[in-house]
Structures are given as structure tokens and as C-alpha cells.
Image 1 (spheres, rainbow, N blue to C red):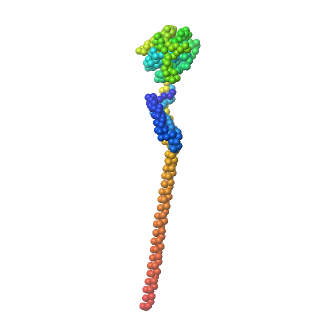
Image 2: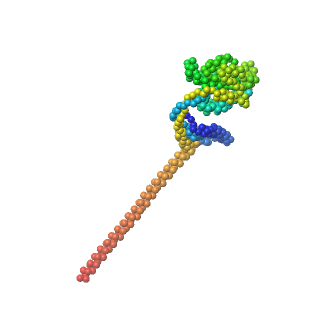
Amino acid sequence: MFRFEYNFVLYALLIIPILIGFYIFLQYRKRKNLASFGELRLIKLLMSDFSPKMQHLKFTLLMLALTLLIFAIANPQTGSSLEKGKRKGVDIMLCVDVSNSMLAEDMKPNRMEAAKMGISRFIDQLKGDRIGVVVFAGNAFVQLPITSDYAAAKMFVNHINTGLINEQGTDIAAALDLAAVSMLPDDPANLDKNRLSSLTSKVILLISDGEDHFQEAIDVTQKIRELGITVHTIGIGSPRGEPIPIKTRKGIQEFKKDKEGNTVITRLNEAILRDIAAAGNGVYVHASNTNLGFEKIKEKIDTMHKADLEEVTFAKYDSQFQIPLFLALILLFIEMLLFTTHSKLKNWLLEKHQSFKMKSILLILFFLTSSYFVQAQTKEELSAIRKGNREFFKAEEARKNAMELQQDKREINQ
């Protein structure tokens, strides 16, 4: 299981597209300003040292680093230990119509958005129940498997739209059948009476404008009811009818037309929705702008038998913020090493080279001058020694001469 401890921090990611848009605007403005000086091709030749690709790469690295930093602050976590528990509640499977008729604006802002708002409020009222979502038009598929994670359920509901299924239509029978199968532990034909009793705490809620005139939907509902599953219905739209707005490729809003060019009018088919609810031992509610009908459905669910629902939860989560933080720091370090111009790289290398040369020259001069002074000092000392020696020898010779002269005088006197 993966989650962010501080989900609200992820809203900071909205600044990324804003910064990208601002950067694109600045690049456009710079290009426009350069064009005012002359032909861009010639200007590029004059600015041959400049590297736009390097500038784009630096900006991309900054945006990636910022994204990773936001992820790190949000503190991504992984579940490391599982815990099984039981709680009482009801399993609820929503069948949501996503055919083009749900774009009709007899509900505000339209049928589809009104249904989504009602579902979101309905989920907020749930306590202990599990919920899943099936979407349908010409066919059906499970949008959200049954879960007790209400935040995830609301997120999936928020992404429901009429573009989820290409095949148009309103195949209610397929939606009900798929919803029932997704709630059963295995093939309903193999269920024994004891396990069948647990199905009395399961509900299917059909939300549609009911534009399906086939008896097949009633037959499927009766089979579902035999399994103990209750089926409620909510009608979205107006019985009077409303055109279906569509947008052309040029973005112009028009109304959907049939093959003969007539405007298609979509009407709420309350009759079939009432019949389905009756066959499923449930209730039918007509939604309006002031009352979407989910409150009444919730009241009915609250009176139902609550079954023991087993669920798996993650009891312990380990923080993984170190990973995006480390990657962000690496990207920032790489960005710092890049240069937007070739000359900057050359200047940097030249500056380092000149600095090295200057330091080398100063070091050599230091040794040369040091040796010179040493040599000069040595020469002066040798000269003094030699001079002293000469004086010493002269004095010694004078002393000897004086002694010889004195001895000669003594001999004469005798």
C-alpha cells in the first residue's frame, strides 16, 4: 500500500505548470525582442556561444527537482505490515449512467455533474459501509471495485464522465448484472442458503435517466433480488425532455441531431426506473436540483441488516521521503554544473587555468628568490671569512718579525 502522509502538500504541484507557462512566455518574449534587432538567423550566428538547449535542460532539471522536493515534503509512505479486521456495514455498488444523454442541462450544471455531486455527498455520510462503482452506457465496466477507502472512492467518482465508454446507449441490464457479479464471492448458482443470507446486506443503487425500454433490465433485477440483493434507483433529469448539448471540433456548442437532422430530445424514463426498484425490493427517487434523493436512499440503507465485513488495513507505514529528496539534490547538483553558454565554460576553464599558472609562477618565484637570498648570504659570509683570514695571517707575520727583531737586540747588548 502506498500513500502520502501529507496529501495537502501535493497541491503545491500546481505551481509547476504555472512556472512552465511563465518560462515559455519569457522565451517567446525574448525571441520576439531579438527579432526586432534583425534577422534571427544572423543574430543566432552572432550569439553562437549561447546554447538554448542547455538553458532548456537546466530549467527542466529545476522543475524535476522541485517536483521531487514537493513529493519529499509530502512524505511518501509504504505499508509494511498488514492487519485484518471486521466491522459491520453494508456493501453498496453504484451503477452510474455515462451515456451522452447525461449531458442534458435540465439539472444544473447538467445531469452528469449533478449525479457526481450527489454521490460525493452520499459517500461523506457512509460509516462502516463499503462502496464500489460501475459505469455504463452501451456496455458496462467496473470503475471502482468495492472498497472502504472513501477518499479513493470520491476520487474515482470525480473522474467519471461521458467519455469513459465509446459505445453509446443505456444498457441498464448489463450494468446491474455486472454490479451483482462483482459483489458475489463466486458463481451465484453455487451459493448455499447460509451464504445467501449474507447477501441481504448488499445494495445496488442505479443512477440513470432510464432511457432503456427493454424488459431485460427487469428480468435481471428479479434474478438479483432472488439472491437477496436490494436494488434502489434514482432518476436524473426531466420527463419533459431536454436537448443534448455537444461541442464541435471547432469548440462551437450545438445540440445533438438524429440522422434526419432533427434535434434529439432526451427524457427521463421514470416508468422503467420505478419498475426496476419494485422488482429489486427497493425505492425509486426522482432527483431535483434542490434534492438529489440520496438522503432517502441512505435512510433505507441504515435500516438494513449489517453484515460483518472483513477488510485488510495497513497498520504500519514506513517513510520513503529520502528517495525523492536524494534524487532532487542530485538534479540540483547537475544543474549547477551546466552552463548556458559555451563561453562561460571556456571562461571558467580559462580562469582555473590562469589561476593555476599564476599560483605556479608565484611558487617558482618564491623558491627562486629564497635560493637567491640564501646564495647571497652565503657569498657575503665567505668573503668576510677570507678577509679575516688574510688579516690574521698579516698579524701573525708581523708578530713573528717583531719577536725576531727583539731577540736580535738582546744578542747585541750581551
